[in-house]
Amino acid sequence: MLQSCGALCGWHLLPAGAQLLLAQQAPSLCPLCCPPDLLTEEPRPGLRPVRRLEGGRLLTQAVRLNNNTLNDLTDFPDIMEKLLEYPLDIYWIDLSFNDLPNIDPVLTTFYNLRNLNLHGNSIQHLSEVDKLAVLPHLRNLTLHGNPIEEEKGYRSYVLSTLPQLKNFDFSGVTKLDRSTAAVWRRMNIKPKAIRKKRERY
Image (tube, rainbow, N blue to C red; front, side):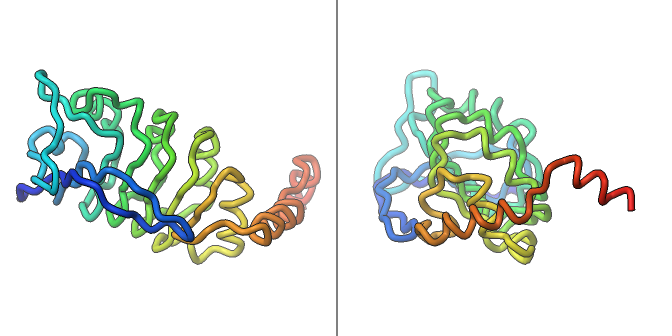
């Protein structure tokens, strides 16, 4: 049964490693199991009223959908089109503490995405991170609390795949992190011909 709770709008500080990001709190709805549920929920009042245009669309660049039971994001872009005035301007999406089994490619349609929270989900394969490489502005990412965190080379894999990150798992990316990721990548990525030859034996 859906419970009515929705967005918090106002100003607050978000810890992201060594930096504090000033961001506008935005839609956080619960408990939702799929994106269409967003259409039937009303935003929760916060410190500041939710800004809406005459047509009812929200004026926000950040979407908080943490602590729900979402396991599929198939309709997410369409729902954002209906709810937000400028969906392509979204720079922050919080999907932490849901049941997402993978990183859905629909997230890559938000070209201006800078902050993406996916911690506390059910993502099982490190290769899922590869999908995020097409987001040039992505600077802050969280993935801890997923099964992939237990995989060998987890941090190095993510940082070598997404070298533009400034903060990963609420920890600033250091020069040492970058050099370790570069060494890890050289040691673990083999030319295709060699890989195929080894697979035959």
